[in-house]
Image (cartoon, rainbow, N blue to C red; front, side):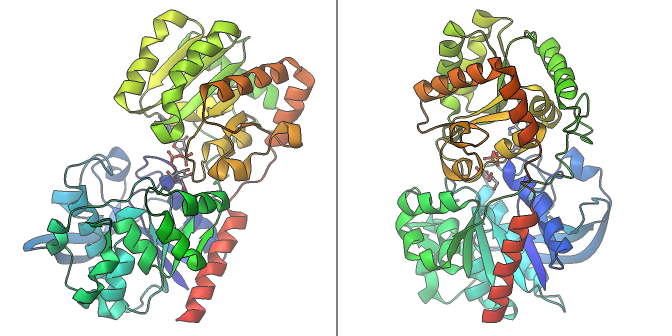
Length: 471
Ligand code: ADP
Ligand code: GLC
């Protein structure tokens, strides 16, 4: 069996969020299970991709409407990820510093998908499964099933994984001319809410639809920005498979990004060194419990609640807060504006910094995840692996991975994404922190929890096998 994953992110070559971590790790675990897995992603203009070695395996041309674009398929020979990875080079459209956020994203997403399919048609050995991630590659299941040009790929089963249904990638019917010709009676499969909707088209056309936790799959049937009816209708082919983490990358004993490495036997000293560095760097008091947030500053993550959480917490609790993230400018500005009021107790790093995130996992005392929507969430699993206690809202993957300490679990949970609920949880965390024996016992326990891909990769392998039997 040969599986091809198509994705716009793959760690460490291009990362915006957890999608990159999943695509950079799951294929390695599948390959180890004798399920040969390859990844194809766009070629970006970023340092991580510029520093790789490449071997060109194919040159071709696609058409977006009337416009021809030459493309190149390059195998990345130096990535050392434990699986084969290819980059699609289309200089005019894909060679940009970031994966997304451009005025011509629709054309960019389409060009990548067309180049992948065009190239696959030239191969002698076709993949047994094409696995698409999110709406960026969501037109592939439709094109494989119905576009005239890809007849050769018709019987290949397609899988869609929804990492985040907040983003659907829809665009106007005016752009229908960009899509290669297909039987026009199938046009309805592309449409949702009078737009061409790649996520909806993938939900309709993929042979299987997965999302990244069982709870999020249930939630999506109730609320999915207008796609809930479609997801309930397609319920039979949908399933939630919890993400894992890659313990080779996320290991406090070997992580080259942290200040001091540690394992379960040296956890207290190791974590104290990392906390010391953070407190020096950000002017915080090492003796106070340190609460951190790491993530995209968007409504889904509950980031808009952070300014009030900071003010209310610092009004009556003797703790420190550190926030790492970027996103909505109004949230960033409100968080920055609070700094002069709480010097020595609160700080921020507005931006993306992979190294700093690792040090925070290794040195903070509690991690805040007040998410409104959390399909899976990886931060809480990284936190456990580094001995950092997560405070999470019971939603999506957070609900599936973090049981509350009151129920014999290992996190602090609240039901609402509200300032009040988060502050109440912070109060519980302070009590726990003060009970040194219980606090340290919990840290020693969580660092041993196995959330690696080993289990979930087997579920994907079984899913692929079942699809191959249907062919
Ligand atoms: P999402 O994909 O929705 O952003 P996840 O929890 O799945 O959420 O994954 C987020 C990933 O991105 C984690 O690896 C987290 O450490 C990382 N991350 C998020 N924001 C930042 C940031 N500002 N700097 C460094 N790493 C970040
Ligand atoms: C998305 C989700 C996040 C999930 C990640 C990887 O970005 O927001 O919850 O962990 O994808 O699947």
